[in-house]
Amino acid sequence: MEIIHVSAECYPVAKAGGLGDVVGALPKYQCQAGHIAKVVMPMYRTKFLYENEWTVDFKGSANLGNWFFDYTIIKEPTNKLGFDLFLVDINGLLDRQKVYGYDDDTERFTAFQIAVVNWMRNWEHQPDVVHCHDHHTGLIPFMMQYCYDYQQLASVPTVFTIHNGQYQGWMGWDKSRYIPRWDLWKRGMLEWGESINPLASAVKCAGKVTTVSQSYMEELRYNSNGLEKLFEYERGKCQGILNGIDNAVWDPQTDKYLTHHFGVKDVTEGKQKNKELLCERFGLDVNKPLFVFIGRLVGEKAADILPDAIKSAVHNTQAQANFLVLGSGETQVEWAFQQMVEPYKGIFNCVIGYDETLSHLMYAGADFLLMPSRVEPCGLNQMYAMRYGTVSMVRSTGGLQDTVVDMGDTDGFGIRFNQATVGDVDYSIGRAVSVYQDQEHMKKMRQYMMQIDHSWESCVEQYINVYRSLR
Ligand code: ADP
Image 1 (cartoon, rainbow, N blue to C red):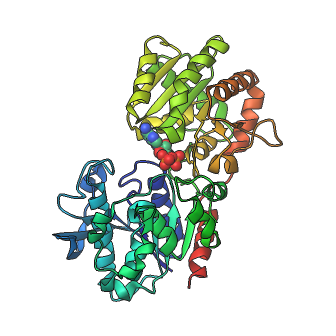
Image 2: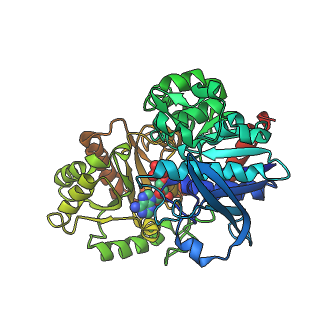
Image 3: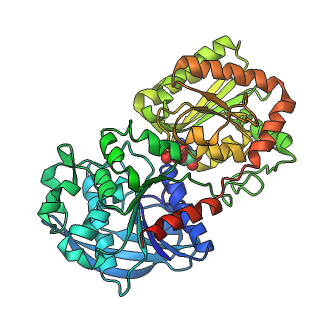
């Protein structure tokens, strides 16, 4: 099958979170399974862009309302990532340093989607499926079906995957002029509430909708930032498929970001060496259990409760634990962590920012990974942690509850709690500190979780079945 993935992120080209990891891996494994998977994404000014050679694949022009723009589609010609990669260059709009966070993100991603559909319209053949990811690509299923200029694409099946349903790309009706001439009778297919809602539109217009875990699929029916009724109504076309992890990138035996590699057999010694590096660098005590948090410092991840939870745990365990935080996000949360560095010297440290290399060292060197998320569609961190023998401490929600078994249950290897509260996190840290005293138990849990198969190979077939069901 020929599958066209359209996404705002793709690792290692540009990544802001889990979406990038998934779109960097799924197509690669689809190609390995004998399919032709391609990725098309915006051309940002990233390191990957400058470090690689590109060829021009297509040049075109289109309109965003009254604004006429030229676009160029460039291609990475060597199949370096294991799939064909295309970048859409729109001068002045997409070629920025960051993926998101600009005032004109609506214009940027709408123009990107128009360019992609324009480009595909010019092909001599049709792909078997167009697979769109998250709201930045949510208008594509609508445009392919209801824009007069793209009628030749109306019969191409579309799949939409929700990696995060909290962000929906809302835009006012004044911006409906951006969408190329469309059938006005189909207004309802764009609308949710008072505005144009690209995520809702994709759920209505795509042939199939998938989310990145089964539990998240169910959660969306009662907690989806206003779209609960829509998910209830469209449940027939929705399916949860748990993400995999890219075992070629996330492998403690070969990880290019690590200096000390390890496997199941020497997990204790291997993790210890990585922990020593971390503790030395951040002034922490290597003899105490090391708890880490890696991620966006936002409400969804419940990062806001961590400063108080950590203070409370330090007090209740008589400082028998170390903490290291890596992330960026809401200013007040960043500030709260930064304020703790001095008073909790030797016990707590943090890095505010994005650091891929450090994140790998943290998965490798930490004893416990904290994930108190309020919302977690799939969560990749806990799966990476498992692969590196780090015990995940997760709130029972979304993909976290589909992947982590509490150590109190049969074959358990993690710690689960129910509420994103200081009390629950503090209590769970207490449990972790106790189990840490039993190093034999820790070793067994580590070895067990490292052998759990979360590879993409097992998920690829499920996606192919979704595509086939649309033919
Ligand atoms: P999200 O909701 O952010 O997509 P996921 O758990 O699905 O959460 O994926 C998060 C990915 O982003 C993981 O690969 C994680 O290691 C990475 N990540 C998040 N924040 C940072 C950071 N500050 N530095 C390095 N990597 C990060």
